[in-house]
Length: 110
Image (cartoon, rainbow, N blue to C red; front, top):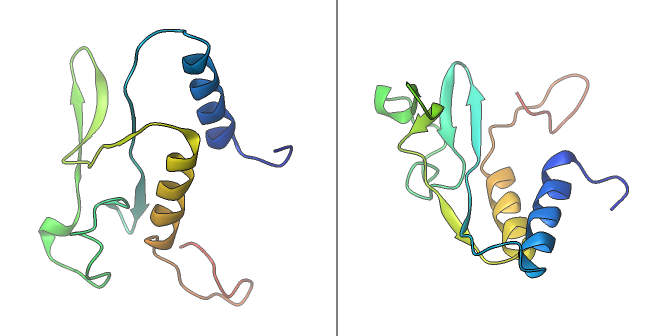
């Protein structure tokens, strides 16, 4: 846990507080990648079926709401009950990321 990033630490804290009775809440996870100026939903199985999709509809749109702020239109929210489910989704999303080899790293995120 000492080498965990910000997201895993924040998720653990959210579920720890919910277990202590800090309120009744539904937690949802989303995960995006911005690559070549396209926004990709990493948790949407349908859009990740063909990683070489090049149509204009392949990218999601970033919008701004006057009171809620910025959001990604059409993003797939996945409801989770505990941190173990978050970990599974993070793994699934990481596997859907666009990667390409470079001279420095054979599994570089591009």
